[in-house]
Image (tube, rainbow, N blue to C red; front, side, top):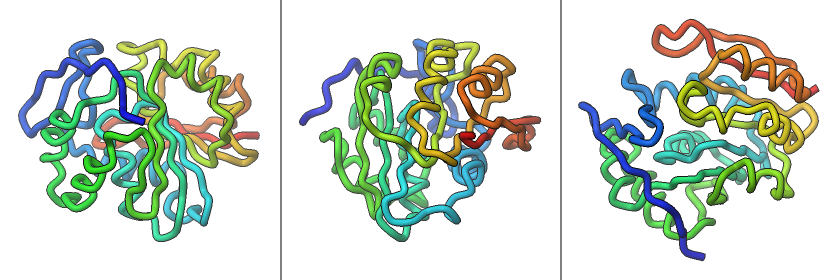
Length: 218
């Protein structure tokens, strides 16, 4: 199935960092997007140590696909990845964004080759992108993730992706003992995740950011 979507309007900052005009927020850290992904989403979910055949990662906010790329880089056995994205980039935007990660050139090329379909394989990762507002699409999803990457735009800029009802859906679609990690330590997000059924803790943030959040489904 071809990807049908509303292409995001972007500005570009020095270093090839795309910035959403709708949310006035960059897609990845100005201080190193790949390093941030490794710190927040991989280490925050104790990956790659937990990866095993069939392990399922889910994500709010596909963006440039950077988190998928980082997962594919470390996955040595078959795993699954499902991402929920309302405004997926087109191929030209992805190519421009991926230029910031020359060390991932083989994977970025493979991602773009598969990306016109909503389901494709990247290395050892069976990836699926579910297009639409996660508040509508996640409740209809029949999966359960072992780890979540919560990577929407800043809660101050994109509050819809961090509301209590959606955080409840995240927990409801998490396997027992499953985890989440996110760059934000916003109090209302942490409280919503705790109320949903996660044991929430703070960890050191990336690149001088004081805190991030992580948790385990009780």
